Length: 345
Length: 256
Image 1: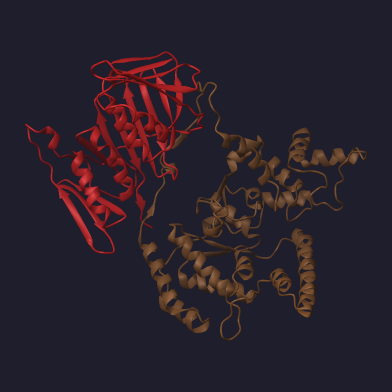
Image 2 (image 1 turned 60 degrees about the vertical axis):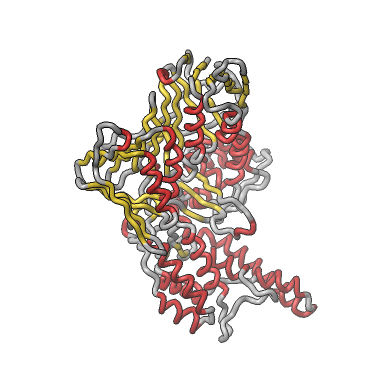
């Protein structure tokens, strides 16, 4: 995910990707290096998860993405001919693909930086969620709402958005989301499938509000699908070949590496290795790389601030007389947010 | 209905001042036993727990449990309207949407009354388990404040090592390092200057200087402060009040 962002966003003014003298793209390394430093500077210890093979259910979505990329490719050629640089820039961003080499380069960079990473057997989000669930990490950071369906207890969005955009980081707690929606986990997964995930198309005409209503009426997707089939006159049409059961299975039992077998270790950065790799091979500025490495060292040494949550347990709520007081506005806002987030992308 | 009268506004002012650094909005829980407050800072690293028992008030009445949701910045603004020596009365009805704060000067010829709008705060209550602390250090609160102040310019964290012989505060930073060692001492005529150490086993904790300094805002409330430590557990920093206490908990920094 991130690698795509870097290849798309980290560019020079003329819209060209950053390149080393040899002409290799280095946008991804640049982005990875500085973003990781920023994360570490803020006292966070990251673990990167790399996507494995896509589940076969995703082939439909991937095919669509492929078509879009092809279209962009064509449009880019057109733009090249007409010399429209703005268009060219726009479409060249859409044709980006992360290559295997770039993936491996990113991993090499992380190794040199002493940052652990995990190769997920399948979907990275599923692995993230599993690590968070096992308590190996505090939260899963992803823009992808699927992470919640994989039962990550805490999802962070916008964790590494540019500071200039002033977007606050959103922390979504799964338990509170379920409480707010008043739904068990299975129903929540069904809800997300209904609204469209990477594996199933959304059902036309069903937005978040209707989806919640329908699922409450029919309990789960099996009930709903049966109802729609039995009532052909209803407004909703289930797409043909809609493998919602498989999608559900994928969310409930994803293909992951058992978190218990993973040993996540943050190690000292290999400063000389970094210099060799980034400066000599990839043409980074030596000063900046050395400076970055010393920041890594410093933050590795400082002990991490613990949190109280592990020591003190939340007591069940007692009803107190709160009377007719001014409501905090964000409470209401919270609810709508929670519904919205289940709608993907 | 809550009605509480304090002979000196300064106590309440100082308490709010000390808590304000850590929390913005919190519930004051009023019961027949007194006024209590428990809140964590937003990053869930520290917790403040305040208890003002009913006997600390010259008059106190609370017939039904009330949770008063208060924005502490706003409360501070109102408390600034009174003098330290004023008699302070807090009043809230059962379904009140505001807290009435009344000041009366010592000559009893000036009365002022302010109302603070309350908020509905959805707050979690934490159960604090009974911890067997390995060490308990009681020392002058000003001394603790001085150590924290001195060390803040050197390091982001302070390590407290406690042994039979004494307690040692150390800091290590980019510019160098430093340490302060205090030995137990007692003086009969000035008990507030004593340093006392109760120890069952040596203990060492590393803590954030910034948070400790925030706790030190309570220095004016009590001449003595008690630090309670247990390995890998949150430190308890307690300022005893004449009737009640102000306690701070801080999660330690963890070494990998």
